[in-house]
Amino acid sequence: MGHDQKPLKGQIALVTGAGKGIGRACALALAQAGADVILGLRNSNLLADREEFEATGSNVLPVQMDVSKLDEIRDAVSVGHEHFGRIDVLINNAGIGAPNPAEKVTEGDFDETLDVNLKGTFFTAQEVGRIMIAQGYGRIINISSQAGFVALPTESIYCMTKAALVHLTKCLALEWAKYNITVNAVAPTFITTPGTRKWLEDPEFYQSVIDRIPLGRVGKTMDVAEPVVFLATPAASMITGATLMIDGGWTIQ
Ligand code: NAD
Image (cartoon, rainbow, N blue to C red; front, side, top):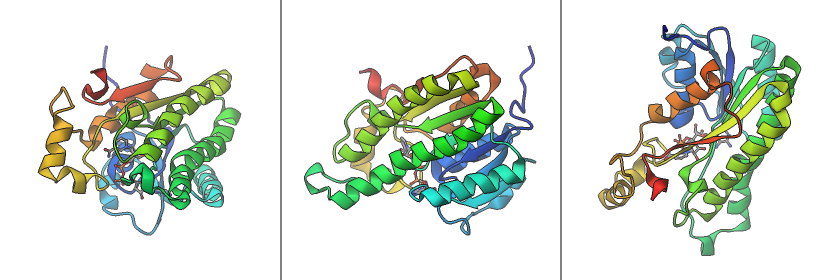
């Protein structure tokens, strides 16, 4: 059996928070798999190294999309949909989770994290879901975290949102299965990204992380992006409502 190098040829994907880190890697891996990609960016003027996308031979369309603003979600999805004519794959990646001891969390901190991680994810899924329902096809992948399964100190709000995404994944999978839409999630361990680099560069913190990961290393962004692409391919067409751990074994012990 030959391995299809471009299993997503002709498909259109939207990735939120696509400018850097895991979102950027997902967008790049989807483009390498043949999909044209709508890049949801909090600041659409700030797309670095566009050539990296162009080298894949796929088209990319940067759109202004702060997922904490419902009007920006609506506009971005509509611009992308009008440009490409459909949206087959949605990666709900945008997320924030600055360390914040529970006793210090303000109402503002609470709302800000929920606005991006939960409200943003839900309403992006709804907006794109309406298009997928009309098409009778869709693949939605939410970026959760191992923090949705185990507690991480100083991350109570973040952990709560990531656990909620695991359950939202099941809820949407159940409601939209009849439209041939699958909804899955991935739950990564620590991945080196612009968001985590400053913590992982602290040798003591890094060692405490490595001590918890049976595979003995933190993740690279492509360790997440490749399984995300798999969940968008026909090979995964019977998988829905699942959350795939990408944690090097952190949560098995
Ligand atoms: P990062 O901080 O390096 O990048 C986050 C991305 O999200 C950036 O592109 C940023 O612009 C975007 N973003 C933030 N707020 C936004 C908003 N309101 N609207 C649109 N975009 C917004 O983060 P990362 O480490 O690549 O994380 C990406 C996702 O993966 C997040 O959901 C995060 O919770 C999850 N995750 C990360 C790790 C990790 O260790 N890096 C582990 C598990 C899960």
